[in-house]
Length: 164
Length: 164
Image 1 (tube, rainbow over the protein chains, first blue to last red):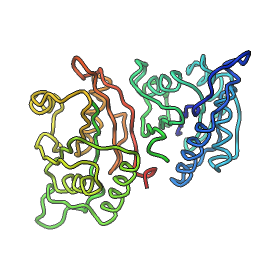
Image 2 (image 1 turned 180 degrees about the horizontal axis):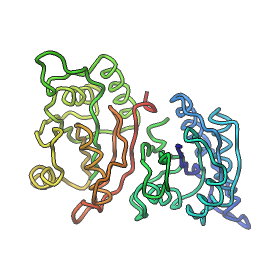
Image 3 (image 1 turned 120 degrees about the vertical axis):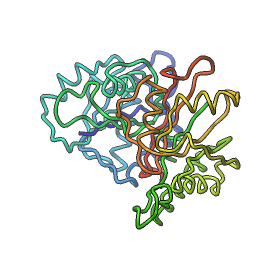
């Protein structure tokens, strides 16, 4: 199975009584995310499902991926907010679904969570040594059998700069 | 300092009395490498120097990067052949040059060396969990002070599929 961990695009600053969860993508953030999505479509990437954090900037990012044709399935999960825990996501969300090993899932969320999750999957622990830009994406291949923790492979780490 | 580790493009099979070192890029290998180089130029990437393995398929890959305008400086080093050792490269090649921390170097070589080198720089040891495709590239940021071993960051891991 392949996991694609995508960080939301550039978001507006928090103003007035707005909560952090309500921050929207800026115009630039939308445009960069759209270009990334188009380039991924051109590379023949498709997801069986996009799972997004419910925070507006992440959910809007996921909607852009859907609009570009990267998937027709969009769900949201509180496990992808910026306090999300990968162990809980694996046991509570992923394992019960029993996806086939050919499944490609995109998770749209936040930093430093996503790069930490990637490190835990690939190296078994996180020490903050992966740089994931806004609207950037990490690609992880999970093993067909056994725990993915420290047993996965990384095949993609792409900043939007080279996808526009 | 930033290191860009690039794997040579698709090469022909070894035939007749030809040695492995003499294998050239195929037409497809040249074309894919050219597209990658163009996309990197479009992303405003430039290298202060490209250091290539002397094996023909790697040196030809480096020449394509030069022709695309990614650098005007090309050298070759036996330390980048497929028996190259990163510790030797660091002490014998990199350290004596005393490059500034703004230097961007591209190293064009072979697998599994390059992804092993990346893992040693970022995580201190290699266990074969980075997938680097032909004509793909890894981007590593070295720390400004101290040993880069296990102290570097990865910001790029890009297969040619998304750069063409």
